[in-house]
Image: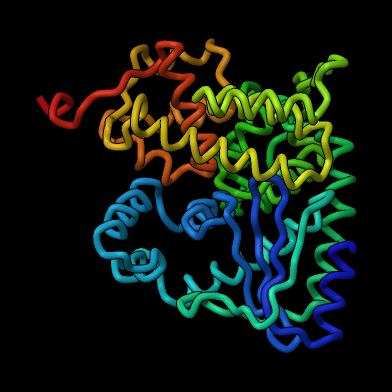
Amino acid sequence: MSLPDLLQWAASGRKTGTLSLKNGPLHKKIYFQDGAIIGSSSNDAREYLGQFMLSEGIITEQQLKDAFDLQAQTKVMLGRILVKKGLVSEGKVGEILRLKAEETIYSLFLWTDSDFQFLENELPPGDQVLISIRVEDVLMEGLRRYDTSKTIRQSLPHNGVVLKRSAKPLPPEIASKTFPKRIYDMVDSRRTLADIILEAHASEYIVCQVLYVMVQKGYVEVGKGAAPVAVRTPADTPQALMEAAKELIKSGDSEGALVVLEKARRTAGKNPEMNALIQVAEEHFIDKAYRHYLPPKKIPVLKKPLESLMSQDLSPEEGFLVSRVNGSWDLRSIISISPLREVDALRAFKKLRERGIIDLVDVQSRNA
């Protein structure tokens, strides 16, 4: 079934329950009551409340980090902490939560496939802010975004393209808007589209939509950037790669297993066994990383000046994390405010340490 068919089925049948959808490591849920959408949830870090607050410019990364520290002590919901600290009003939190719920749902229209199930009468946790959206309205916006994304990709074919400003100045009607102006300021002839998406703390679609308009109007130009090319040998069948990954997990090399499984996923299509194997490998890697080479309370420090790292071949993920290394935030704090999945942030930090770009120190030694 297609996503529009699923949504229409739930609406016409006046269903109450949870539509659960999985695509690789991503897991999203849409909650229904009597056929209307009342909420959604996602394990995509870019769709967390804190990331929406950052993308809207409501709070800073330091304020989000401080709020997470307080949340770890009190177990109070993030939105309530931000309100209590006077950083945002309750009304604004509700507005952002609704936006967050809608964006999670609309993002599903860009998925090419997923595994799904409907859990009858299962409703969201009692502490979740509920919304009310008609399925008909979701379908109209979701399908519009699907068509728009195909048009956008004609000008921005992949996230590896480098963007640069043209000689044509940004007009006042765009420069006066906070989010578009912030995106424009990130265009510097060096950052790739992937870099800008991470830096913006916003969804890929929203950032690409803003930049597409700027490209079409001539304020931004698309430079050169190589798209990643997957090379496949005859032995690289999904089944053979999965068997190799299982052996790597058994031997304790969970990161090696993830590399192999990523290669397999590009050609396997829907494969529940592979998705389960990826989850196992990710859990093993996160546990091993924190216990052995990336203790969460250690503070990362740069071994080279930040300016000299611009010539380094850093991935967008590595570049984002390096720019947040300030000598006072520990690993856990940087990961918590980043739009990256925990496993992806840890893998990037591991590479940075192996390449001699960062070192890890104790809080005491840093203060000495």
